[in-house]
Image 1 (cartoon, rainbow, N blue to C red):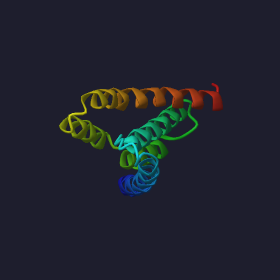
Image 2 (spheres, one colour):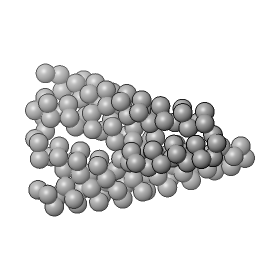
Image 3 (cartoon, rainbow, N blue to C red):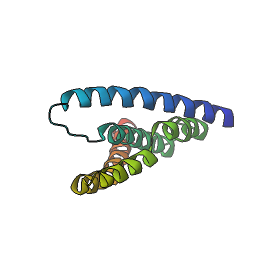
Length: 131
């Protein structure tokens, strides 16, 4: 079981890299003229991971999925996919650039968006499998 969690963690990290690069390319292309440097990709990735975690956990609670599957997906894949440490590093980077308002907003969003996404994931799972 442990090796499966590790394998899924590696797959999650690879998925994060691909999504991160894709979002950054698109975001940077759109904002090249305005010189806005907002770390959108990490916020999106953590939101998606939280949404998926909410769905997975509620699916487990409703007994649609077994614990081993949840562990491989949530701890393994989503653990490798999400990146709270990068989000905190980006807040510090914005502070070092003296972009205090953006740092504060991003810091709040870094906490609020995943919480909202987990709740949305719970709701989606409940709609899909009413008990």
